[in-house]
Structures are given as structure tokens and as C-alpha cells.
Length: 388
Image 1: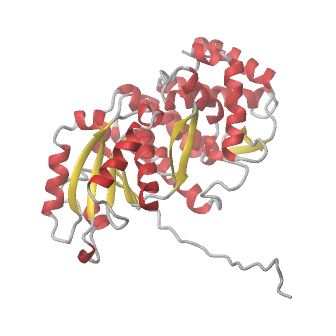
Image 2 (image 1 turned 135 degrees about the vertical axis):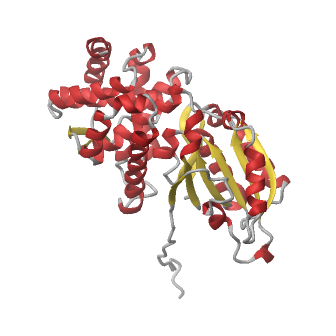
Image 3 (image 1 turned 180 degrees about the vertical axis):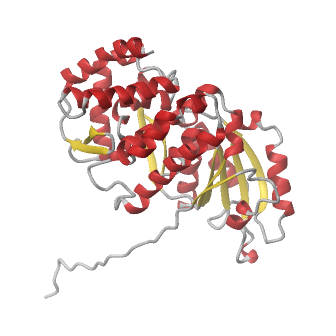
């Protein structure tokens, strides 16, 4: 008699090359970087491309479409056919409804963009998340290039292999793991950021420094005036080191698709994500992360892990960069605490949250006590007043 429970199976691996580049003047024909990424080994495939730009970016750089088209025309090597320059909503609004996702999918369909063609996203991290989600799900995956244009996206958000949009009131509820074909960071694009958006990205650089690199934290700590004054010579090494550390975690950390319980690079994020929503996104991601870091660092001190001297250095650095550590939205502790369960649900398995034993020495815990979170939140305005 045949075995009714026969099983056939095997294991396989899919290698990914994940390149993150820093350059200057990306769309200058004298810069070969973009061309080297897009060059077609088989022009007979007739690859095409669309460029999707964040509206704020397109307004700040009104010649962007002209420059991008001129770049493709100037290349000697076979390039994709430039079909459309699409402008979409930027900022968190790009992820808060289906509008940006739908617009990109419609452009992919309208222009006959196939799996061998390209979608190039130019903008901030939230918009790139939505564009990446559309690229990853159309035809089950279209070649995608990210061109981040903010300090936050160049140092963190665009480095990862995730994409997605917010849905049902939850951050990143819909999304995929799909590495981009390249991440191309152009420091020139940082020059037109508002001061608020410029500073926002440095919350993530502090986060990765606290987790992975005490020397980087000391560099940030000693460079707060230069960063606030937008000195690119002093600031770009911080952004680049942040990107390097985030990339190293993805490539060498053993869990690029987050199949395990811990998600250490989301230190400070369980409350930050909920804080963004509780403020109706009046607080941007970087500002929320700064408050989230403050909460988790104070919590680490209250439970006997982090020494007070190191806590004061961390909070002082955040304030010196220009972050506020308190907002009326953070006082909704009950609402904030719901973010903890959403954080657990998003990752799966038991709750795992990262705290600090010391700068550069994170520790995972599986319980967060609400009364101590409330105590940490109560200390935020006092800390801001005493240091501000």
C-alpha cells in the first residue's frame, strides 16, 4: 500500500547583494555610479524605468526630472528607456493610506514595467517604504533602486531590506522583506532639508551608537554644535558610520528577515511608533525615536541597569542636538503602552525589548513594567527643564 503521508522537500538559499553607496551629484553625467547600476547586459530585454519622486523633493529640486533624463541620454552604455517621472506625496502621509502605493502600481502598469525593468525612488524614508512595497508586490518583484534624500533615510531607513505602509492604525502593518538592487546616497540632497528634518535623522545615529559603537556616540557627543549648524564635513562621517553599522547588522547579524524574536535595531521604537500615531503624526519619526530612546534609557536606569552618569550623557546629547524629550502625547501612558503589544505582534513570539546595560552594551528583556514606564515618562519634562 502507498504511504499516504509521503513528504517531499529540501532546503535552498537565495543570495542577495546589498550595496549601499555614498556619492555626490548623482545625476551628473560625469558620475558613473547610477549608470553602472542600470547598465543592461542584454539590451534585447528592452528594460524600461520610471522615477518616483517625493513631492517635497521635486519642489526643492525643480530640475530633477530634466537632470535624470539628461543623465540617461548621456550614458554610452545601454540604459533602460526612461518612461515616466512620477511625483507622489512625501513624508509619513505616503504610508498612511494606499494613495502612494496605488499611484506607483498604476505607473508600473501604465508604462509596461516588467521584472527586468526598474523603479527608482527618490525621497525620504517613508515614501521609499511605500514605493518599495509597490515595487516588491508588482509582478512579485521589480528591480528597485533607492535614492534617499534625508539624514534619517541615508543613515538608517533606506539601508534596510524592509518596505511597507501603515494600515488599520498600525505602523508597517502591510509590507515585505525585499532588498533593493542598490541604495545611492547623494549628500547634495541633504542641503535643502528643513532644519527639523535635518536633525531628525540623528536620533537614529544615536540609537545605533548606543547599541553598537561607543566611539561613534563620543563623536556625536562632541559634534553636536557642528551637526546643528549643518556642517557636512563634520556630519557626513556620522551618517555614513550609522549606515555602515545598520548594513553590518543586516549582512552579518544572521537575521536579515527578522525571523527571530529580538529586533535590537528597534531600540526605543516600541514607544516611538505609538507616539507618532498618538500625535496624529505631528511628531515625526526621528523626534519620536529621540523620546523613545529617552524613555528606554531612563527605564534602564530605573531597573538598575544603566548608570546615571551614562544616562545623563545620553539625554544631554539628545537635547544638545535640538530634540525635545517631552510632548503632551507621551503623557498618554495607557495609549503608549498599547504599542508594546503591537510591537510584539509585529515581530511575533514572546515580547523582546532591548534595554541598555551601558553605552555599547544592549540587553534583551522579556518584560516591561507599566508603572516603571509611567515613572520614566514623568521624568521626561524635569530632565528637559534641567538640561535645556
